[in-house]
Length: 314
Image (cartoon, rainbow, N blue to C red; front, side, top):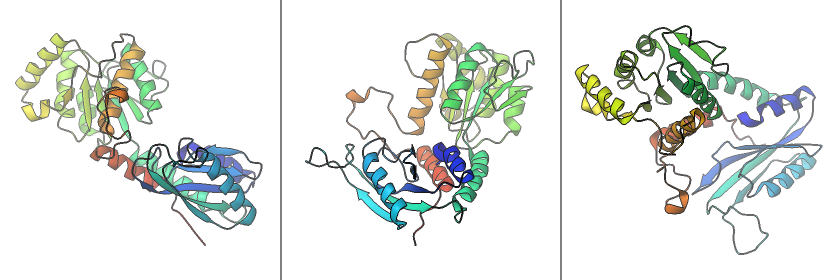
């Protein structure tokens, strides 16, 4: 519900009633997860979506009806059938959507849930730690923010680690990166990207990162640099199992060389790992497009569910 939070707060501030539609169950392949939200106010203004466009028109009309009657509704939308204009999900799955009317003058539960969700999101937000205040890091910080990460830039060199160089970063950590990694909270939804390209920074930082719970650890460098780094890690006592976790050279093979291209390649690899993707063109695969088999992706969905308001009925 984060994508509609600002709109809902505005409607509450202005006392504007609205209908709130949420996905409460998903069956098979569906474009959105449980908790996806669409809201419609009395002027017909809409915010959010529940299906990426497949059944939005029908949910919109259902919201208008609930606004008029005040009665909560729950409806299931299945896969698209033979009727050319019948509502349905073209991806082959099904969703159940619950809709209820919200009157800001008497119902403050949504705002309370938004505030609680915001606090929880800050505590549980996925983190991206970028080691190295280099040119490529600026593009990667922007990519991390685009993907929804709380981004930290870590560098021992104060001249490089500044808010002026990385205005989008949530945190600038000045000091030896391996010392920062040893004390900062690192969880399963943390990704660590080593961009320093310097053994005196890389090896100590990777020695900590590869032993942490971080789900993704990558390091930039040419194949020669990466091979040399592996030998240095072994000499530093890093085990083969720990080294096997390292994504280096970092990113998917997209062919680009500009900082933005490299950031895109790194972001793509992180997304593929998080959601069990192959990195191949979709036309060359026949697997489900919305995989739910990856443990980290499932954990991320659980965090989203904890932040999403629960369905209520009268």
